[in-house]
Length: 193
Image (cartoon, rainbow, N blue to C red):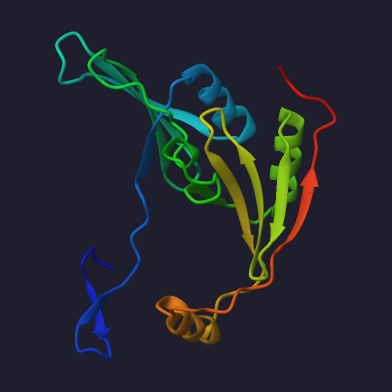
C-alpha cells in the first residue's frame, strides 16, 4: 500500500487513511548514555545500529544520535552537548508531572511470548510488573531515563465488537470504568549496582 493511499469513504463521506505505516524510529533524549546503552542492549536485547554526530544550532555545540535496531524498526536517543539548551528531565511522563504510565514505550513481545522478556529483565536486576488487560498481557519496567517500558503480548485478536465498543466510548462524557487489571509483581533475586 502506498503512503497516503485511501480506503473507501467513511460514513461521513470522507475517505479514511489506512493505518499501515509503521514507525521508522522514535527518538528521545537521554542524560545518561552509558546506562541507556546498557539497558537497551542488555535488558531489551536491541542491537546498536548507527551513531550520527552532528552540530547543534549553537557554535561549538554538538549532539550524538544513537540508533538501536528493535527487530522491527529503530529506536534512537539523543545525547546533547550544548550549553545553550536547557537541562531537562528525560522521563517522558514524570518529567512533565504525569504518572509514569501515561507516556510510555510498548514493544510487541513476539512469537516467544513474555517469558523470555520477563526473565531477561529479572536477570538484569529489574522489578517487573505484569498486568493482564483482558485483550493483552503486559510487562513493565523503568529504563535509566525514568521512562516506563513495556513488553506486550496480545491474548486475542481485536474484533468488530471491540471496534464498536471503541466508537461508543471514544467521546462518551461519562463512560463506565473497566475492572482493574490483575497485577503481579516479579522481583529480581538480586539488584545490579
